[in-house]
Length: 273
Ligand SMILES: [Zn+2]
Picture (cartoon, rainbow, N blue to C red):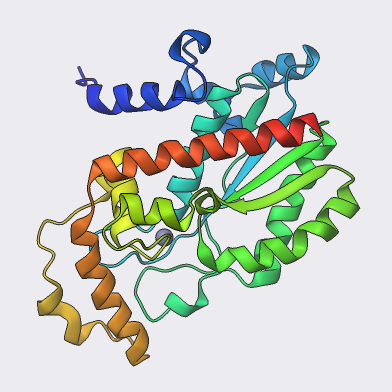
């Protein structure tokens, strides 16, 4: 029998019932219930028939190198986790669409493992998913981004997407939730989002610690053979590797809670518009 992961379950339950809505107001909802790709046709159809489904969140991320210690899926997994927690808080009004797990990352291609899409490919996938959701009758879509390289492309395309689809549509990176004061309050480096440094590593330690693996990581030993062409980028890679050591689960937990509250508020405003 698999041992239940109590600390994580407790953490997710805490998030699902965080400060904005007291625990008593939020009945337990199974975390999979708000993930479109985990639902059956019957479950989704019934949500529509009952008129309860009002909005969708589309997480966008990347599959890209995150230094020596952090899994490639970080940006996708973090945006999806924030989306899921927000949808749980607003259940059954909000569903999370299948994440776009590869983003625009050409500048990391000199580091092994990174996958990248051309900007037009990425935007075409995002648009087609939004159009699919609109076809099923969802009139409100929040694109929740977790990868810096997607940000400009999404922001510049949303007005056109909105016009073509005739729905309420916004695109935000989840770190828009954080003011510079919050960054200073919670992080020694005050750097959000950074890349695989204190912030993202703290997020992962809180949400999915199995994706942080320090065993055998020795930056000094490998830095000469990483093959990073741009000296500025190489220096940054080394700096972020050092800053990542400042990460803690407690920092991540506090910052995730803030992002979830922010997304819940954005969705409430969008649904009320
Ligand atoms: Zn990242």
